[in-house]
Amino acid sequence: MVEPTTSAQELAPLLDGFRLGLAIHVVAECRVLAALITLVRPPGALRTELGQLREEHVRQQETAERLAVLAPRSDDWYDCALELRVLVLDHAKREEYLRSSFDALIPATIRQSLVAQYVSERLRLLSTTSPLAVARTTLAA
Image (cartoon, rainbow, N blue to C red; front, side):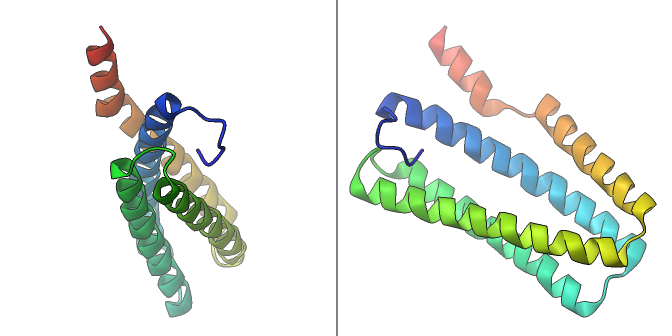
């Protein structure tokens, strides 16, 4: 979305897809992390890190919502798109860091079960929710 060659017409569907994907990721991740906390009872430091993940998601969603109301390809739009990109990349790095903590604290069988639960949650959400795609298809008909 931050490429200057992307047309304004392409930006709305890209942003819609990102927002939908982010929403699905957030819900699936929250459900899996809630299961993790009940199964393993992680130490306080790890719980703090998990809370920071949630705060990062809030900032990502707020930034994506702000981006949705800005004029595509304007300077403000690009500034906001770059901010969103940085938030997502920083979040991905934090998740990589947490993965090593999970490996040290959580038995492999539980980790595998949580990964499977995350995939199932995402698929369940995708199969039951896609108002953005339905609306776009309806309007295009």
